[in-house]
Length: 116
Length: 114
Image 1 (cartoon, each protein chain N blue to C red):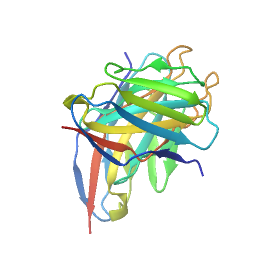
Image 2: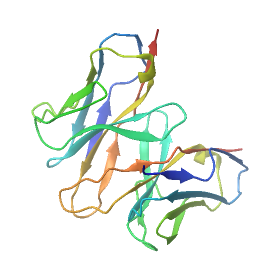
Image 3: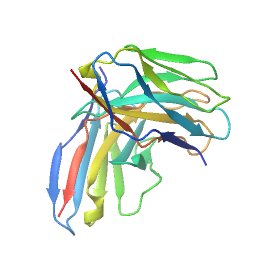
Image 4: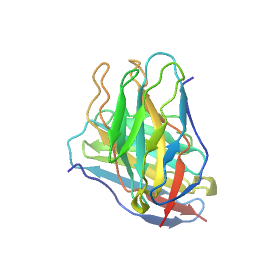
């Protein structure tokens, strides 16, 4: 079974703190993604990576950065957490895209982050 | 741009009732369409998919048909169970050669009561 794990299920941080969210996948997938999930807004893509050390901005990258030093690990970084970053964060991975083919994204269980 | 619109929830049903969750999309070209499900405390799982017009995706008693003429992909199940209580997301994917991503609807929460 594909497994995507996230370092924490629940996290509480204070405004201004630096926050690291870690994601690890065990299927040798090339693509990894970070989404945030908010009620009424669905999932919105923050960043994705299609290879080690490669990253692309998604729809809402402001206030976030990412790091992918190893193929299996993709980190989301909040340099200075703010209350409007309180949300559920979901990591996903998939094998690489080929023209006209969608490869399923497999999701982790999510990290519910609260910024006070 | 590309987008997905789902009916707002929550949807509350009794066990064995018929379920429909509406989903319509806007896209340039021919997207692939998906339904994802999120059970309480878990991440999203792919429930079913359809990659071209008139395709019907099905899984676990759920069905959805890709209707190009109405740009819809409504989710249906003939008899829901308490274990179907979850949040359901409709999504589309387009491979444009550039920025490739899944676009999700807002999600519809389903609560099934015994």
